[in-house]
Length: 156
Image 1: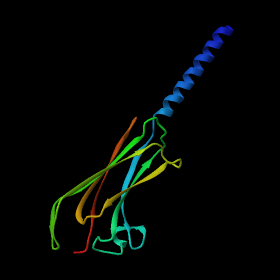
Image 2: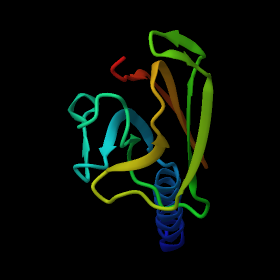
Image 3: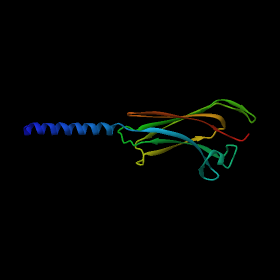
Image 4: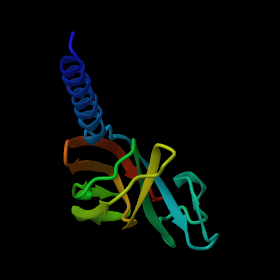
């Protein structure tokens, strides 16, 4: 084997190595891990579980939905995380509650180095026995959805 042939094989091997590592580095490994409901208790000034709120009637609290995103990302375009929540019209002993729907979008330019990023969404707490929450993550090479079927309970 001549020195020219050796040089060609080394260059070709180096190009293949660089292109294979570049290809794997550009493919983000990002997933939605889940959605969790908490409430911000204004009287306590802290996040608590729904059943730990100081007011059982849903007053003086805000809904906080925590979306967990797993993976690392440092792309040119940000990831888009959209959260929508809705509840149907319902009747209860306390009266009629109208249907409602809300949506928010956040842009994620980078994710936490540790591999798990928790993104909070703050919503008005509206009593409802059935609430459907949908989190959707989109971006270059990324698409995922997680749902949470929950309630925003209130004492009647």
